[in-house]
Image 1 (cartoon, one colour):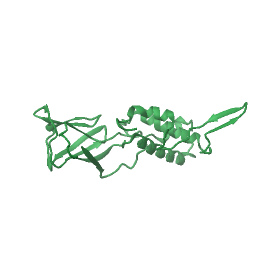
Image 2: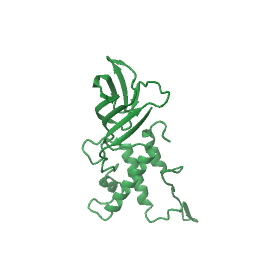
Image 3: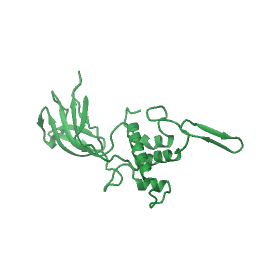
Image 4: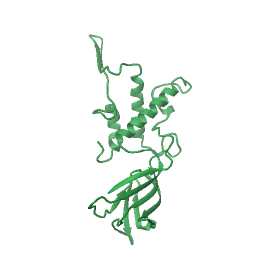
Length: 214
């Protein structure tokens, strides 16, 4: 089973934390605006890095997901929507015809969409496609009713903090030592490499990784 997701109006704000939260973590006074621009850039950068590391889109958006068979696929008992948690489903269209909500059952947290017939479990039977129009993803920090897990926001804050600590430091320097005085070792990496994120950030993100995502 394959699927493709299209979004008519991508979210304009994808920041996984707020400027105020980061400044509090870095002990920067709320009234000190001198670093606002660079911190916001780093928040956006960290948010993109974390989304890339997790391998799926996080922000709540309205999506249209089209499922179709691959060769020799058996009829599945469930379809798995890509954008989770699922806030609502506007329509489910099978081979061009909309079906009633009584013909499916949703687990909003996992995105599993089960086929139902007369109240009993069934399989998804179709020739061409199933098209699901729905709202899925998290409400981000700074919005009312935010539901992004605190662990993901914490990972973003930790990554921004690491960026801030490395400001002005030679990015190729892995360690330095002054005998009998100091010995420092720094994390060096980039998204896509082994050890792509600092270990504390990786640990915070571990519970939110989906099966099959490295």
